[in-house]
Length: 372
Image 1: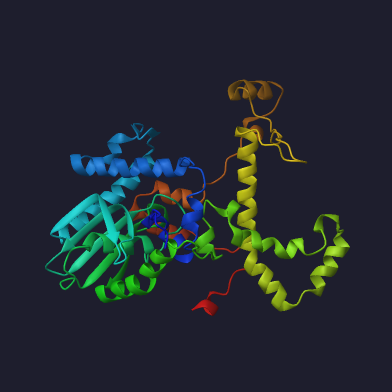
Image 2 (image 1 turned 90 degrees about the vertical axis):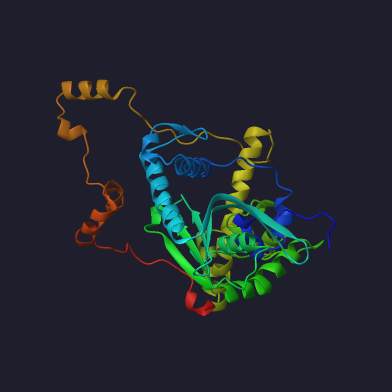
């Protein structure tokens, strides 16, 4: 095994459990600052913690700055939603901790640690509560690897005999009400032995295995240097350059593919597409910030679009030559999703009788029944 232990984080556990080799690869990638969405999420967490400690209303902070981010009404409402879950856990537990630093150490002395948003325990009921606030729009499952590790880290050093259940809750205002997954202590212990510990050991090997999958590759910073990703292009390198083929040539290739070949290509497509996107982003940053020169490529401005210099002057001029306001202004009804944000939670039920879900057509999707 490697002499220097690589750092493991619960927040990226779904990635390194699926692909243990990603930890070592990501350690070779230069640090990239958090994007705007992540910074806003950090600010909302900080707001909620502050308001919990001071027992004050997050809505008082609309327009204020927190962690360098100017808070919107939506941001403050998310903090309110999260505080309600904190108070709920506080009411049913003997002890609760917000922004709790936790560390799990396996029997092989490998560590994984981070900050749990909310943890609590009830000795009377034998329940451990682990809650995480997600401020993004991408749906997060409540049966969550990150929360399982937080639970194990929180109870490390405690006797497990009294623990009956683990209640793992995701608070994600963009996706509706909080969602809770319940598992027994025996189920969590089995996952610890069969899934978590083997993956932790594998990350520390001198040559940890690399595996291609959606869960491993989607948010991996090392896509551009990953040998397993690069192998996806072996079939391309071994065949005729598609850039010199005309539409008829490509059509003939498609017609010659068997059903199994089409299925195999579609299985690889998401990973290949993500790899290409990562290469584009890396190339743009390298050319713009580091001056990298790529043969046959250059930085070019995006297609310009016209914008009014002064909207009031534009309206005055257009109406002076005979155009009416009804000609130059557009008014459309907001979407049901936008209306939902404007309504109090208790009134959102009216949308059920006003809306219908309509599919825009068909698309290709994985048959999930085959993996169950």
